[in-house]
Image (cartoon, rainbow, N blue to C red; front, side):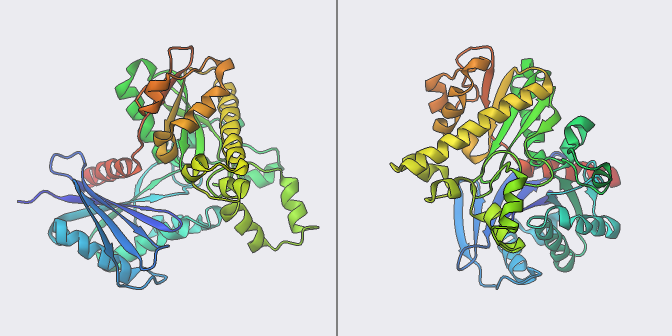
Length: 394
């Protein structure tokens, strides 16, 4: 009898990452993965099966419900992995769980409605997760679906970290700090404890540096504070998002600046960050290769804000034993890590240049503050939680 399979869906604002896991031994083991990039013309499926990489143009149009496109993509997966006979569960990454979800859940009608009701708190990402859940219900109605929430990991943060200095009634309405990238932080916290057990109970700031970027204060592997708060705009500058911004700027742009709310949203989410700072690119690799002074300034601001946020999060924990870099930029760009570390020498962080250049697992030079590079795997967390939930049901 063939082993059961588990699929994971990680929906971004313009991409869908699909993971395929075997459940032969109970614990999910990755077999393949794919990415549907909705920005490309034509839309394509980037499929990875072991050492084999295939780029497959998809013929189905991008519709609001994604039925045709997703059906075609699943067809390609089934061609390689026989999904029709063996797929048993689908796990989803959902960006926002609000104060409703403190951990993963099996998706029934009530859970789906509660997830959809949280859309105003994450208007770019939440609808993508909801429509994928509904599309799978339509295409494969017999599959059990689960949801893993990016905000759930941060529910351990104390009230003093979650509150804004606004009227208490607004806090009760849900205007508070939630934190994001929780699945990534959950994975790297566990990986750090396994690989470097001496740091399992210590105070570490993890920096998830990708197109979206944030930092998290991990005290004994538990979230105590984070750079992102109410929305995925907060904290440090990102590829195209602004990071922390004086609210007076928003009032000015909406008032004397004459911008409309949709225009302001476009500026903050799509035209700011590294792209806005440089006027050249949202990709830090392009900026590092550029001789333009604007590119150098963008990188300098990025590193400046990251280092400052590390110091703030260290204050939240009452100490700092290590800094952990993860995600695309954090894992693969030594120059960014070096620029951050250069501003943190006063805290006792210095990098080993050779280890940093090699993207080694530990890159500090033996100072008071350790530094690590640990690849993240959000899909593995989704798969582990989905498998645990469905095992409990059986």
